[in-house]
Image (tube, rainbow, N blue to C red):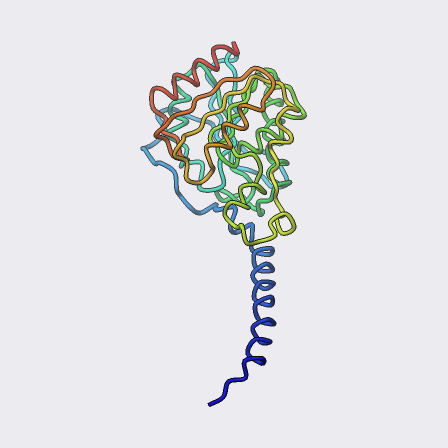
Length: 270
């Protein structure tokens, strides 16, 4: 049996680019399903809230569920931006630690998360963050008394909001420099710069803000390289603090050392 190698080669030369284009198209149209995981729980669940909160609604494009804890009008208020996966309940272990500190807090869920209507996108999440800040402002809490706390994806949202406002401080847990740089790490065979819709370019916005900054990152982070947290810290030009720990992964351990760093940072703001 004779094989026509020229014909086979020509088919391969046609099929390989075609398959690559199909993959690129799939990634382009499906990419937000690869970035946002509202139904996935990859966080720690360590029991119920140890304190009472007020369930509130933040008016963005859609109404967003939020939990508000108020302790004292003279305390700073943490505005918490969660990561790309899970529900508010998955952060209870952090909220229980906040309750022990001299702070108030507001945590809310983005569009498409925790039962909220809508679909998440970069611009949409920025809009939701601004709406949450305005909700606090409506409670007579000024920006100068708000501490932005970003967790993973939420670090980009905190940095974006901070560039246009003057806050008491900014806390970044497991931050990344840009989604484009991160995506190139995971998809080096794709033209990420062309395909990516939500770029979350934090590093270019970082120094548009001059609030005191705390960067927290674990050296064993397998999702966001530790080097990104180090770069965020090293390139920030204003007052800054760090909590870098050798044994932590992406989901940082809220142990007494981390909590002590948070308390020290907040006390310095006061």
